[in-house]
Length: 196
Image: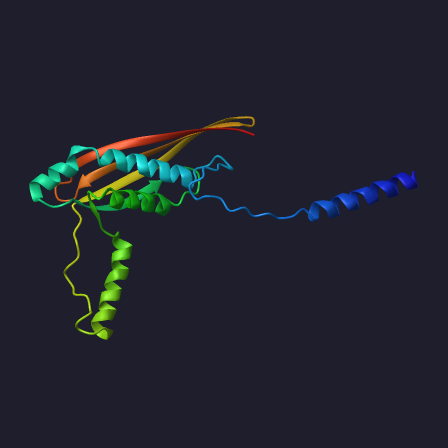
């Protein structure tokens, strides 16, 4: 009996050491590669929804109508995108994905949001004190936005045992800042089935 217990303890120690000595590996993958580890909202979802929503908004008539009426590309600012899911989702990633798609469309101009504008104004104030007159950037030349985009993320989860179904929904709308008119709204859903 003692021999068996000793063998068992020896085997347990060897197994523990072997487990602890498992090599930790890191593999570089393409940023565009779709990898879902947990089934929660991830960078692929953010990029995919941003591409589809901005692709849709740019095919609607509001931008062309603005160009015809003013002779200028519309200026857009992306405001708040509220996360009303139970997950921790940083909306900043999604906002940056949308800004990238808007700018890359070449059909609109995008301005910074309020928090970044304050930082830019601090820099201009600093330049007015310390930069040469020839290179200091002047005041009152900011580009005002014509339209603001708002949004909300929601999720509904159904779970039974080890099976889970999550339906993410992103609603976005674009509003004329002068008239408060909604010129576009749409939603995109992503449904994920997880079987653990």
